[in-house]
Image (cartoon, rainbow, N blue to C red; front, side):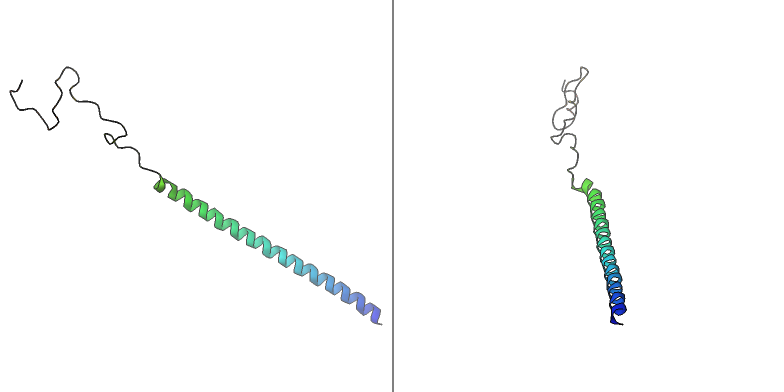
Length: 89
């Protein structure tokens, strides 16, 4: 009479350990999904912040590129401090 009990006990243990293994596997997969989602969120935030971290484009006349010189088309160049006084030609 103890033999059928042992067979049923082994079946119960096998089923129980199979269920535990499946639960552990599901938990590991869920943790991987959470980590992947967190990494994806970090990547999105990094991409949003990336334009803020880039240097500003050069401003004309500030070393990037200079404005065209004044006085083209046959006109005399303007002095550094504004318009020349009237009648100075």
